[in-house]
Length: 454
Image (cartoon, rainbow, N blue to C red):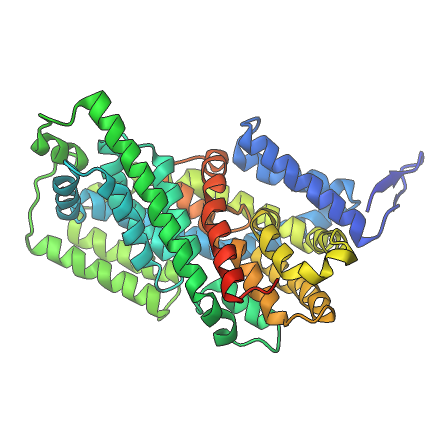
């Protein structure tokens, strides 16, 4: 809705169609991507000011925009609290030496085989994503491996990309958020009808992720051989660097921290309580055992504050973005435009088109907006051309699952970049082209097996 101001100050909304809102929404998203990727404006002010300006242009009052933003902030509070306390928890565990024995073992193995670092990253992320929760994968994998990447001077963007690729491809499991949303949006669909035919395609996608990790591993070997001449490297010094000089001791405190971490993650995975509560309790217990002194506890938490506050700000800014775009109706308008862009002549190929557009659509829509706004219309249109609506759900999984860790609409994306210490723009620019590889392979195999019809 464009706002027209009369000379006497009265305002009226001149454009009231959802299509117009959708165009404004697309303009806002493209502007955000431009500003962030080109580093014209930092992500926090970008995510706040752009949707606010878009809403003003659309004719919404400041009070309405404030209500939209508040709705978005309410939805982001949980993951923000989880992120803050998860960073505190794993920072305490890291400084107490919990990960040191594992890091030392990996260092010992990769001295002659640096490719194992990247391949091992994918293997660890794959196992930890069996619960279908991206946050769990990132919270376990990145804090454990980041010291090793830093010690070997490997670009953190590689770690973030490999974890994103693995979590995205593994997110096709039946209990993953995308599958659950897709089934909920299409009434006739069932979990087994959606997932089972996609198993070969998912397996092919994971093989491609391992291949990508192998490629990076070979590049790391090449760089190390040519720059540092790995021969003659003091393994003890490398381990000392990776562990910040901490002495590796498997004493009772290490065992307690190990059991505590298993318990915290077990409660998280089992869904016994909310993730933020799990980590809050974990932080309290970890502090009491590892840092019993009051002043030391205060100093420890304050030392982690910069890491926490930077990305807490990003998460809250993302809440404003999501709230304004969704509550204003811009996201719905964007969905309507996307449907209109598909010509009738291509209707018979709609499942393939949905699969091809699912990755870029991940950058433009929140999961709820896509699955509950776009997908039902696409499925209904596809049914008119003789396709099973379930096929459209499967097609949507190609990019919607793989691409979730780069979407600005996904809290897990900010958790990922926060833990890895990379910027959102750099992460998208580096990781998104790599995601085309598993997405393409998943689509090809799905077409060959008939999971997605031609």
